[in-house]
Image (spheres, rainbow, N blue to C red):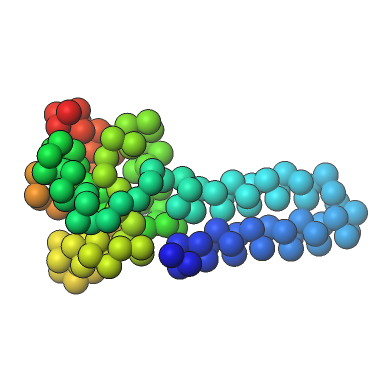
Length: 145
């Protein structure tokens, strides 16, 4: 769990240090917007930007019942963030599995990607798709509900 928070915490610390240095130099007008940018980057790269993650076993069970795709992701992945942002509110309808929190999820991703933990890996009807186009994922979601 702590691994998912390393990048966001580093962004917050780095932003705070840079903003403090700017304030000390008397450039406080630039420090505040810069700190806001670092806080936003930290938030976007944290698990908070994603829907609540469930276990891979639970995601497979739910997907078998409702037919919705499973998204295997990890915090700090720019492609996962792109998918999440482009899906908008529809992202909450998918089953999200954080591979850094769930070893079974990481195993499923490695099995689908010849040993690599390449994310996002989206599983639709039992077929894995690595870093698919968000529009395609949205279309799969509309056909599964």
